[in-house]
Image (cartoon, rainbow, N blue to C red; front, top):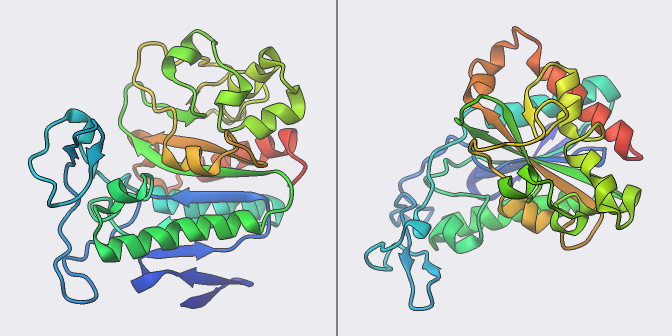
Length: 302
């Protein structure tokens, strides 16, 4: 199904469980955990139970079905908490970037609550093999692929999330672990912005540090807008605090394994997300300005 959105056509997935707003610039914004829909039955009338923990299989890997038996390992815990306000953040970032540049990013939304679909996991963990969840998952991933196909040349995907860690700061994930950031022990090839690093630095990993922790990084441009972020020029390392380095979306759609579209996970603290719609402190425009500055400095679009 499609509807008109400005000068473009919005595409909806099965039962309006997912949504794609096509853009006209080389940025994709994804919101996998911000949906509100929580159907209890599927389209055919079958029950749609909430996502639950998986079980550890004979090979040590998790089995993700509702009939797998008794959950037996912490590694098979299903995360089900929503990242509140992140759907609005994704939309508003796109709107503000358009206001600044005249061009709007592509935006892909999961409209289901995380208890029904976790769009930032592989398909079995994401859906627990519920047929309607599988349909929604495939729509969501197909929308991302569709957005990527619309981009010519280098691009950037921003995956929007929320967390409640202390201290309250935005965590920027590049598939580089807290340990490696703390020790500045990482390489271009390990990151979800590999394409960006190779474009400017070739194989020079020392040069690449500027794009993660230095004055070419997204964190630096957030600092310039008085927004706290790690890693950045003001907070280069997570140190011993909790830190999310990035998940399935970055691994699947970023440039670590090749391609020219980079990916960064943006984990916004609760304090930043709460009251988002009021925009009393201009946080929406500041965040969009930081992203635009990062792209203008490092890419050949915007």
